[in-house]
Image (tube, rainbow, N blue to C red; front, side, top):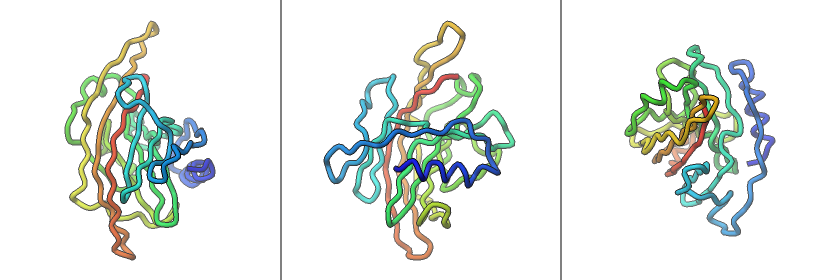
Amino acid sequence: MKKFFVFVSVAVMALCMSLSSCSKDDEGNTGNDDIVGVDSTENNSNVNFFEITINGKTYKESKLGFFSYTSYSNSSLYLTNLFQEENSDFFCDIFLVLSKTKNNFEASLTGNHKLLGTYSWNTEEKNLDLIVRFDKFFGGDHFELLPSSTYNVTEVKLIETTANDKSIYSVSGNFSCQHKNPKTEKVFSSTGKFKYILTI
C-alpha cells in the first residue's frame, strides 16, 4: 500500500484521534501474481507476521504497527494498524485494539474476541479486539460485516521482561470475514492470521 493512503487516513481522522506515529516502508513483491507483500517467518516468536487472503489473492506483511493512535474516551486503549490495501474494488484497513497497561495483557484470554467492521470509538471494545474494515474507496461508506465472520486470539505470550521493567508480548490470532458491498451486493471473503510483537 502506498504511503499516500497512510498519510491521508491519518489526516482525515486527525480531529478524532491523537496520532502517535506514522511510517511505512515500501512493500516488496514476492514475484507471484497471487501473493503480494513481504515474506516473514510465522514461527519466529520475535518477528511480526500478517497474512490475509481476499477473494483468493494472498497478501503478506511484516512491517506491522506502522501507525497507531488513541481516540477512545478510555485512554488506556489505542489502535495499531496491521494492514492496508487498495485497488479498484475495495479499500481494506485492519486495526488491533490494544491496552497500554500490563495488567490487561496479563489478564487477556485466548479464544473468541470482538470483531468489528468499522471504527466505533466507544468503551465497549476491549484489549485485542480486531477491526476489519472494507470500503469501496478510502473514506467511502463501509461494507457490512456479515454475522458469519469470526475472530480468535490463539496466543498471548510474554516473551521477556527487560532490565527497565518493560514487558515484551507476542499476540497471535486468526480471522475469517465476509463483507457485503451494500450497493452492489457483492460479498468479499477474507481469511487471515497475524503475530504482533509489542512492548509495554
